[in-house]
Length: 303
Image (cartoon, rainbow, N blue to C red; front, side, top):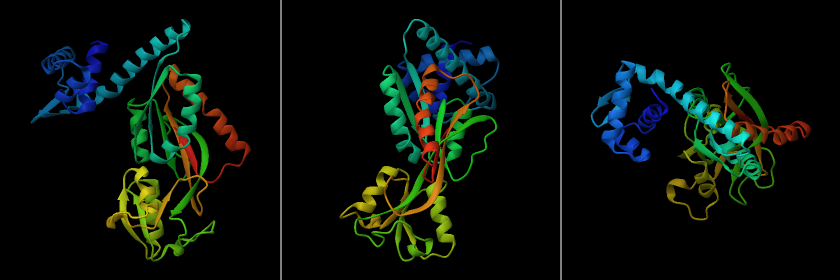
């Protein structure tokens, strides 16, 4: 078993089939199939169930995913360490983030990071609920995760670092019913239409909590991508299905504040690449600034 075989194995896992995996690896599909068959013979177990034109990992395949990712990451870390000795700072940092912390503090961290480490590439994947972030870090799919949570996150098998508090706000169109106010109560939402994220997200949990109190408000759009929310709320002539007046979200300096959230950084308790270590160092100014300025309610955390 070698690194090439493990890389091919993970490509089939990540792309859920041999055809797409071969395309991404720039090799012929028969060559990929032969490599996986050779790995299965060497290990003495089947790694995939062939289901129609697709594949599903067997129990053995599922158990190999985490160790395979760690082996490849350890090799990259070793190469990075040798490059550092030679004065070469290159590499790649794989990050997964929920939508709100993916805007901020990730934007600030990224600006600082690329300034000091221009030859290290950041790869940022998307998650919509905390469990997706935790799973990606636990399985080694990503080294670092950013998530938002309403309370302190408990993950004994991971390192969890609080980054900052952020204000959770209600966004309305200019001149809307709450213009000039800096705080509202849930009952004030009665009679309004809302744009919210999909079930399972922190924002949606907040909205559902408000509606569960009997407030007569209606969700008219469920949006997976946060970038779509503001155009729906602020647009002058949105399509009929999106004529919503309000949305919850993390939008700095946008009143009125309604509730708090916490975001955190999560990382696994395993050796990480130099790039991920440099990335974590870039968080220190943000964390210390929050501590010295009584950070606003709503937090971000790094996993």
